[in-house]
Image (cartoon, rainbow, N blue to C red; front, side, top):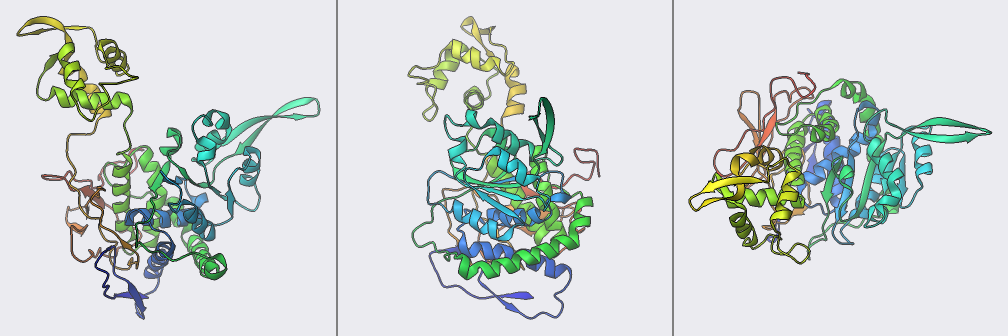
Length: 477
């Protein structure tokens, strides 16, 4: 099937894509049918879930497909639906996920022993879905659930096990319990950092007045969900061997842990073909950039503010530096535990970053204790982002074959990142929109994404986030 766009007349919304109507297309078969299946999954999800952005809907759909191919991957990213307040759709996200993934195990407060035994089930790896995860890892509770945190952390990588001692009669024996499986979590606020860095995080929000989604009822919509799940199982059987051997190209800037997270999802997109290799990489660039916007630690915030107040100066006395820091309106330095920061706090914090703190510097007024800019260079480079502002723009459309009837409101309080997907020669294949109708990415096959990447628009020429042509982080090409 191919799709024909229809118009919409709701003036209060900016549609992510126009509503669509299926029309017969004699050429739709093979690769096009695979891309259409992923389109159907995403459209089904968007009927019932108000996502914070189109890219998060794409990530959710890809994660569901990855759960059907879990044995083919070395890593399985955790999927985390988090929100600051109840009533934001997190449980609905898990409910829809449960309907589409293989062997779902939905739990609110399962014991670690139960989970280990479910993972070892001879019927196959489960897809573990844990709601109200904040009751497990909330304030003051994380220390009491180290076993579960260890299971969720280690199970991110294939072949991971957890060692336990068991008593057999009079003998104490060691046992190795496998922990690798697909895991989706939902809860309030943040997860422990070790889990956050292993997760595709979807920050759910309450719907705005007038923002509409359909109610999901299992007895009404369950049949359609089951049909999609069966089609996904057939898709997984067709592509499992190819996916297991694939090494997807990654946009530049997605590396280390981010690469581990997105490799399985991009492999799924490449196996689907159509617009999905382009769409998935645009979503990866967007969501990795958003993840890096999480609140900084106090130490990193101090480094950033010191870089700001130093400006072009090559040195500054401790007294002047503290005065400048105290004067920053939106910074906490005037009241840390009720007192302004002092030279001791400054030295204690900066020592962690191996910054010399007992310098005597020469100024026009004489000599005094202070700091030299060159002593911060290594910490600035390692812990702070380059000083390049990102221009707020509207989210890009999903393009041909991936239309959805859900509309996403224009929200000036959020920062969206416009993306361009380039081929190996640097020609633009797809560009996100600032306005107007959605862009139409080209259809490309499973192996057609070699050299694809994305770049982030910023003021001035944007740094290209295209895939490197050289070896990747493991030395592979």
